[in-house]
Image (tube, rainbow, N blue to C red; front, side, top):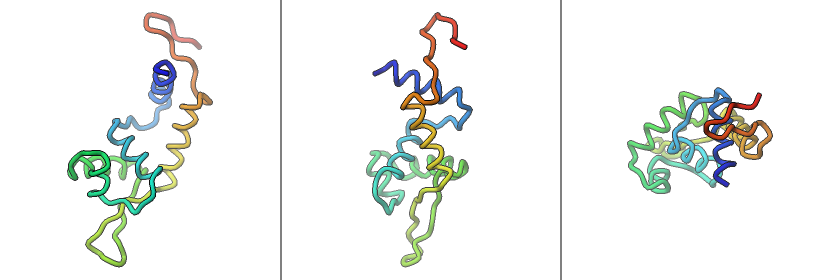
Length: 115
């Protein structure tokens, strides 16, 4: 299990995609894998972190185009965190890495890389 996780992470690093933190990846997955609407307060509660921590992660994910903030049309004071097609594409690619479709076995420590 840990070998597969290592292989996935090595393939992810090699992919050249944005280098997300665990917190950013968890936030992205919560938004894409659970039913919304998602708010900063709700996401902070799910992750067990403060709202400013979620806001910083959202800033990065927003710059990458993986998530978007949208104002609630019924109550303009509320902001929802929504999915984007770019974020969905990123997660599909990551899913492929997990499934091993786009990953080569990472060399063991001290072993030469496989071509």
